[in-house]
Length: 110
Image (cartoon, rainbow, N blue to C red; front, side, top):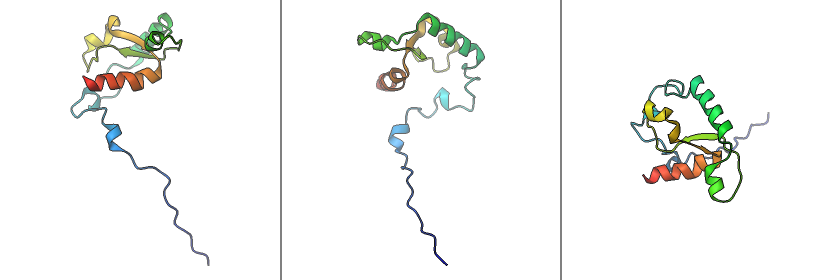
């Protein structure tokens, strides 16, 4: 009878240095769902409307590029403050790359 060979795992180990975007005690780490934090149906409708009105990424435009905005970013992080969350003057249209990479780096420096 042939013995089965044990294979090495191809799953990379998680680099915990790259996962420290949410600080302990952050409003994001609570037991609340995204909808309970304000990102429910009402937000989805407001987001869709804002992106129809502002279809291009502001950061791409500043670089002379034209890229569709897919994210409504809060210019000043609201950190759970619903008044700041819903203030449209605190919203900006960004592409996913600028929101996930550049905006996150900017917030981590603050």
